[in-house]
Structures are given as structure tokens and as C-alpha cells.
Length: 304
Image 1: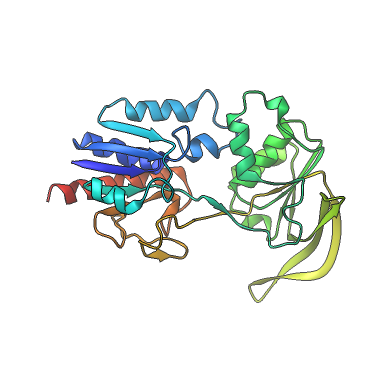
Image 2 (image 1 turned 120 degrees about the vertical axis):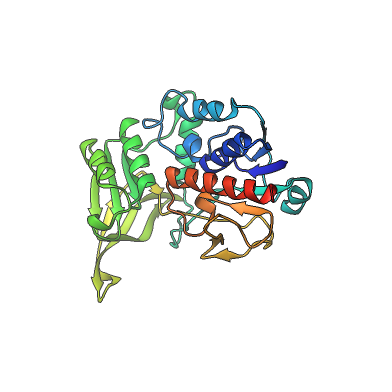
């Protein structure tokens, strides 16, 4: 049978690999120039060395029965309805393409960068010395991406790097290991603070006005006490969002694709997994498991 896998990230590669083992012909449609998804574009360079993501993709493809077409983005030249018609089944491993907004005036000023985009540029750069990095860097967020861009900034030569997180350190999404990694590399953690205003001079961000926070009856709120932090580079690492490129063809749940335990979507013959699926854990190992589960379900579906 002919199966389409949209997205060559961990979920898509895992699904394609298992489907090929089941004897199906698989075509992967990938929007970017390289396979690997977040493993290639979203993990700091110091963590994934020696072309790790590409070697992993090559291993998956080496079993045969899988063809990859790069530069094929769903929602543009590639339409979900057309893919469904030309294949016996479809798996969507689209990941998260959008970035949460800070919700502050001037958040698009020069000097404010999206952490995910910066890491992606870093991973593909041939000469790291040409990447811009500030002397005083502020990172807004408390997850793995915040730690990645903070540590990476330090390694690139930033003199002072501070992570700002609106809740307590115990509530950070970054693991204890990641937090320790940041601190041992000289990154400062300032918790229970949230940005209130971007400080701008001549069209460029020069710092943040922040407010201390606390919890009142379980709800996070500002204390009213503010302070200013200077910076010549500010990173937003406050999470990614799913962009519906299917034109409303699938039912969503909480802003992501609704799936059942076997990763089937609301439309027969279409499965989804990884970060784009509702209930996902935003972890590579979870995405790989989604791909495996979906592949077994697709195989059962195709074999009746």
C-alpha cells in the first residue's frame, strides 16, 4: 500500500520506518531542506553534535521502501485532500510552526529574537562567529528552549545571560538537569518575574521593565513592584503553537489535532502524532512512540 507521511521529524520518521518494516511503500513530504525536524533545527548545537539528526535520518531511510521529498509544505503547494486521494493512508507529523506572542508593545523591535528561529539558524550556520550575540542577554521563558538559547549565548561569548521566568524555579518546565546545566555555565535564573514593557531607544530594544509575581489562591498575579533590566539582546522562549494548515479539515482539541489512543484523527484514513497532536508531551521520545503507534494502527487498517 502507498502511505504518505507529512513531516520528517521524529514522529514522521518513526512512523515511516515501521510502515516500511510492515511492507508498505512510504513517501515523506518535508517542508524544510533537511529531515530531522526539531532534532535538526530545534536543539542547541552543543547538545546535538556530529550531524546526529542526519545520521539518524539516514539510518531510518536505509531499510528501503521510503522516499523523501523535501521542500513540500502542507497548506501551500501540498493540499491535504490531494495527498489523501493519492495515498491509501496519511500520517501527519507537522510539529509546531507558530510562536507564542509576548503580548507587549514593541516586542518586534530590533534586538528581540525568537529563540527557536535563532537556534535553527545556529544549527545551520557554517561559521558561528558570524552569528549576532549580545553582551547582556535576557531570555524570557522557563522551558528547554530557554535553557538552550541561554547556554548557547554564553558559549558564543555573551558576558551576562539571565533567564526570566514568571513562576517559581520548581515550576519551570526545564528539567532539574537542564537548570543545573544553565547555572553551571554561568546563566542566572530569576524566577517570579514577568516582563511588563519592552524598553526601546531609537527603534531598538535596550531592556525590559519587569514585575515581581506571586500566587494568590493559586492564580499568578503581579505584585505591582517593578524594576528595569538592561539588555542588548532579548530572546522570546515562551512556547510554540500549532498552525492549522489543513483548512479546518480536521477536528482540533486545545489548538492541536484531536487524536484517539491509536493516533487516528477525526477523518478516516488520516493519523497524526508528535507535537501537532493534542495531549502530546513535547518530547522526542513521545513523538517517536506516537509514530510507532500510528504505524501499527495504519497497518491494521490497510490489511483489513
